[in-house]
Length: 107
Image (cartoon, rainbow, N blue to C red; front, side, top):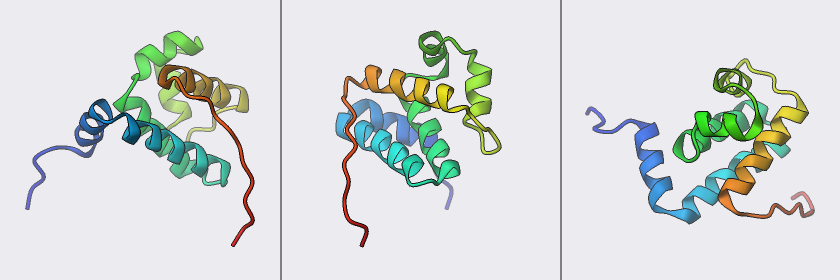
């Protein structure tokens, strides 16, 4: 059975219609990065960016060309901590959320 919509289009439509979904997508990206799974974290972050602010607008905020942002978040990309935190800060501001870190005992 063929899909009628691409994954990217589906995520984008849902993110535009549902603020909670958008925030959960960002939260999932950040938690995954903090847990050390850089590849999956970057993939979810790319999905979030594509579904929300877009790489063109993000580039204006962080002062980095869109192609460089794409490369940083690509599977083989290796963003510096300064670039990664700059991206996260810009996304946090565009989503109008405050980030908190909390500790929980590992199960």
